[in-house]
Length: 377
Ligand code: UDP
Image (tube, rainbow, N blue to C red; front, side, top):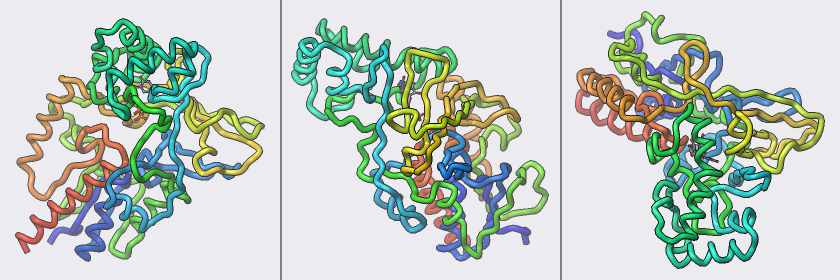
């Protein structure tokens, strides 16, 4: 008999959700290993001395159209009704992105803005989201001008900073498509039905999810140093690390945050301000906006993108180029030879998931596990 029935590697959303499902719905024991000193992976947050909830690894904003994901999480937290808006500073002017019909009026003289707006409405249906690389394929001179403007002012330099010197056409097109050109007056970053920030933070939410008598959490514990035997393994770490990098290392982008405290109530108008064209940081987060924390001081974080270096910083974003996808596929093929081992999460699947997709994927892995499980019982 293995010493541990179900072993889970990682206590981010992936690990926490599957732990809860196994513990509650199958009534089985689960052990979660977490190599960091805290739970929650990169969604970890904490209240600082001023009572401001800080997202240690950058802003996490929950949004989803999946009712099952929303309902599941609402069993463990309440959410506020925060709907994210991102300000971008373009030539010193503040506007909202995704770049939309109201942004046009912020950055251009009103006669030109009206002409561009009319052209857009003649060529696209209202409420359409157009990825910038698609939007560049215009024949009309005015729209070409607009496309080049948006490409240059919103995407080009931000992407070069964020992705380490590469341009939007050199990265997976789905990445820039996350922030489309939006034929709408909706200034929000997301249009999902359900949006919000957990009222007591993400760490408390994860803590509540794994708070079950069948779940044991071991912090500061690396899988590599783990000697006990187990029956089923749920691995949410980076897949290349599991296989000891035998085919090579998958690359990731990391982030370095420079935190600053100010002796004033607010630093900027919203939680996130992007600086596509200026400075070496990509954006500035001001955390008190998320939960409307009251303090005479404020804390901001300037976000600097960097290469991921094992042991020095954390993995944030998979770099989805042809070389890495081929490498990932080699590891994926290896997993097919393994029994009772499941890989998932941003690092386990090497996918640029948002939180809701991570939760949904954990649901799917659980359903799949249940099927295998029932067939051997
Ligand atoms: N992006 C950009 N300019 C912006 C915002 C985003 O060029 O002002 C591009 C950039 O390549 C970025 C991608 O769109 O990596 C996705 O942005 P998103 O805000 O979704 O990134 P996340 O919040 O996941 O870091």
